[in-house]
Image (cartoon, rainbow, N blue to C red; front, side):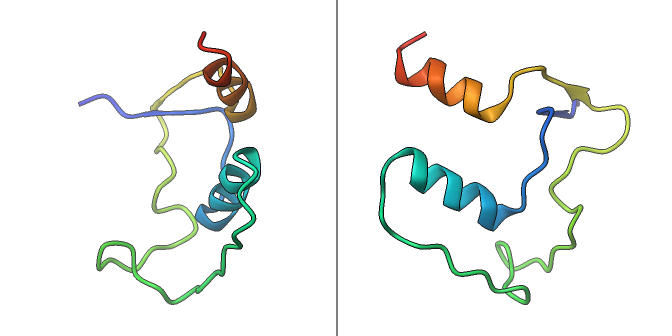
Length: 71
């Protein structure tokens, strides 16, 4: 198994907000620090790649720009 990640870290609510904003979607994201993720309680680092993961060099905004232009 190979663990991969990107060069940036985001909280899940921040990722949701930025994704909605990039799509010009007016909905808001409401955070709930005690909510479960598919039944599991998460910490701040639960979904962050561990040491030794392969870290890609592409930032999220750069990927979104390329994806929007079909590249």
